[in-house]
Length: 108
Image (cartoon, rainbow, N blue to C red):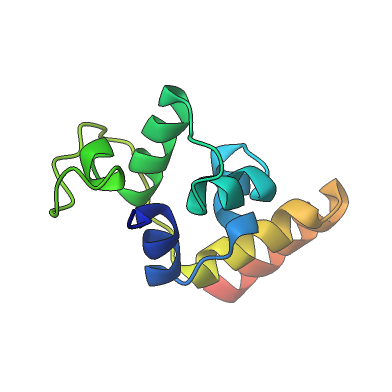
């Protein structure tokens, strides 16, 4: 069976760990879904569809078009933005504050 999870992730230049963290699952779980070792539960399917901005039917290869998305608050991040988010999350709280101050200073 064609694997849309992996296909969509690679199209966007994302690593498994990046997608998994955004979805609140382990990279290992995502890998299992990508290899059809395990199937995602309905809640995870919805999160995957929202994350990739596609329909669940598209994810499950029941249609060839991305489909209509019913959520209004889905945000798509570029690979570079995902790297910034990940790096920021790994910083201590004082370092996060310093990073924000630095970015604001650069903006001016």
